[in-house]
Image 1 (tube, one colour):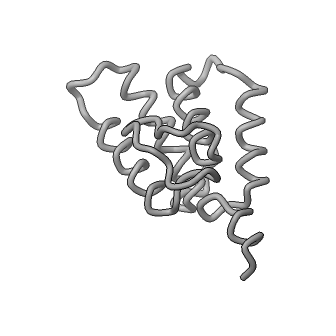
Image 2: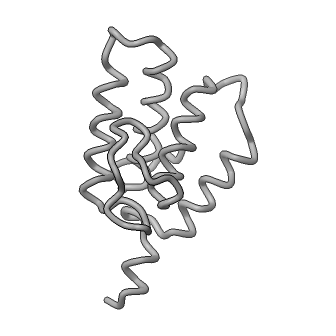
Length: 116
């Protein structure tokens, strides 16, 4: 495996797949069927996974490198988002945002086939 093969992946997806998913969500914007907080969470999850944001959307931890988080960080952030999504003490908007992050990172990491 060459270094190009490693840097062209984001989780289990190709960088191009994740870039395309982000571009699609940016293009469609908020829909009447999906709460905007979840949509924003997915956008932020994709941006962080691609290395466009230095801080994770839920834990606010720093990515391991300039190309974005390592697979362990993706998994940890997805898990933190899932915990926040299920925390009934939080406002619905916060839980919806966490759901969007979880959905995006689960797809990026190959834990889900459903692309947000």
